[in-house]
Length: 205
Length: 390
Image: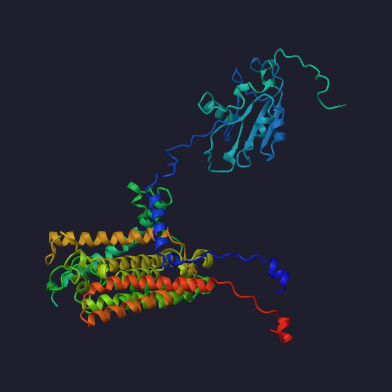
């Protein structure tokens, strides 16, 4: 070993073992005190199926597809969520509603099919951030189970039923307040005029 | 031997053979509960009231499991090893009283013991319980797996080392009581709480308990099965009912050891205020049995608590503790007892002597640690040696 090496090596100091450590008993008594104290402390476990966790309102769980005031699906099939989704779990098929149907009055596009593969989803919440009409939201439902992979692909009806189940409850998501956050969802599509974007907005060219 | 003489024996065998595996089964449950207690959890509480049927559910599950026999294993030994371990553990129980057994016991009366009146009881117990090492060693070897083998070798070394202080530590009590039969030793402690052996042989009690813990392969001495280094140790390749037999053997061993601690050091079934038990099944006999069982349960609980209190020893520390610590102390203790008894002195001299021995042992140990911890003086450089300077 050269002198240079000897100087640069840092020798670890071993803990000093005195009389108290050598006879073990004080350490054992000390340890038993700790274990006994824990034995009589209140339990930190939650009895899960009986005792549900109190989730925050911004919890990101199962998706739902919101309905508008007339009970129609709010989604306008713009594909923004499908584009934003990093896990590629959303598949939308857009369609034009029949023009003479009063149910779809004022709507020129709606999702004929809207599928989310809940097994692929990573619950990042980017779909609801992308949505211009606040149609898709993440609820606080976390105990999602199924007997097959097919069962875990949620279609439009299933996602709408999630909305029916969760709307108005105390765990209604706070992110959108049914449209308060998304200005596009406030627009009455029946009367809205399609205006050119204001100068400075939109892509150049 | 007529049937009338045989029924107490058969009853005792039936009780032991039914109770001991049940206790072994429930030890797993109690162990999980204690673990949960110490870790601020609740532990198993789903099967039955308070989770009490968890042990039964576990037993049913593990018995229905597939039993894998490795292709390279020594089939016959692989099959017999768990049985050998369990049989050895159960045989040791034969001389352990589980209730009051007066020394002047007539035949043909129910006795809380399979084999009462065995004059070499302790010797038989030590001999047979060390046979359970065969189960572990054969199992480890027959598995044809290096981790199992390492576990078995460790277990072998540990058994050989800790047999010595285990036997030496109780020789002082044997010398005082003048008998090797366990009920005789308990009878010598019957006069009152101050006559319990732990008061005049505290050092022997500590040595016996420590060595017994090592014999049962429990933490902090569970090196034969330490998961971090050996996967599972000697039972790595075992599954299903064969694995259960190994664990039953281990827990039976724990129960035996707890009984021994209670019987040899804590006065057995004696407790101040409780009348000395009459012969046979009477109220006071059952009360005495309950006292013994409570003492044993307290020792078991202490062993379980120690598991979650102490970290595992390193192997050289384990060997050092036996050969450099416990064996010299046990020998000095035995020497002290022999000198005191042969000079006709009071046995209470052994209390300060025990404490002094313990302190001396600790002091010597601390000194050796200090010497070992001193920095090594730097070696002279090799080129100086070559030049003949150093």
